[in-house]
Image 1 (tube, one colour):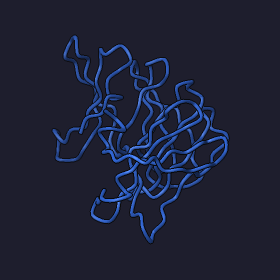
Image 2 (cartoon, rainbow, N blue to C red):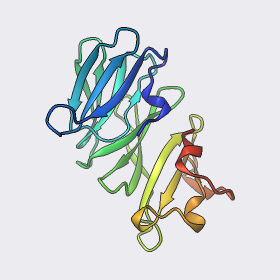
Image 3 (cartoon, helix red, strand yellow):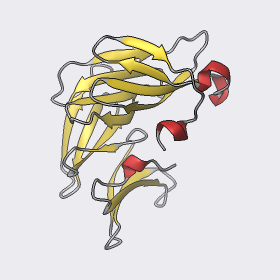
Image 4 (cartoon, rainbow, N blue to C red):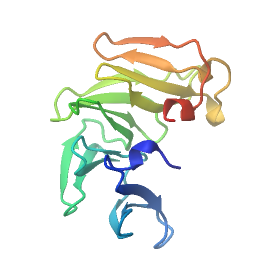
Length: 186
């Protein structure tokens, strides 16, 4: 499962998951020029992203976002109040906000400032209609777009229409067009 943000900003490196060692998925970084592969770690949430300067990778873990240096693999943590597994880490264009999914079933989209302040939950699933949320992406520094799924990853009907969320106004709306996760993250 590949996404455009897995390529480094200069397109010289690529992040990928593999179970090549013992069947356990781990995150790797390959230098596309030299072919050298680095093991970045294991047990990180799905779908990491690159830092604004391209020198760190932001990864989801249980109750924290881990910033891993691609040079020396040193780590810094941004702690999240909830101890859920974090995934779909996304950095705003300015680099000062991070959105992410919380929980193994992707029930919540949350936001935190890059300095670790200002944590808040933005959107939670409506369990009567929606089973999980999917593919959150920043449109700009103040707006995100995401999809919702029904049980068994059902995208039919209104669940195939993207949601638009205004971070500043806490306002949610649905766009009147059908799309897939490839349209959100082409």
